[in-house]
Image (tube, rainbow, N blue to C red; front, side):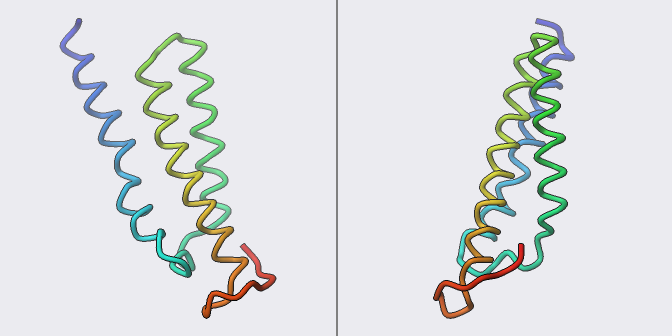
Length: 97
C-alpha cells in the first residue's frame, strides 16, 4: 500500500464525516430553515456523480467516501422535507422547501 493511500483515506474520512455536525443540528424538528434545498440537491447530484466516477475507476475509497456523504445529505434533505410539512407547533402544513 502506498503512503499516499493513507492520505486519501484520511481525507475521505474527514470529508465524509464533516456532515455530522450539520445533521446533528438539523435533527430537531423545525431546525432546517437555514439550509438551502437547491444547494442540498446540487450537492447530492455531485456526490452521486463522484460515486459513478469511483465505480468506473474501481476506486473503493472514492465510492465509500461519497456514498457516506450522500447518505448524510439525503438525511438533511429528509429533515428539510419534514420541516416543510410541519408548522412550528408540529402540526401538518403545506410548505415550501
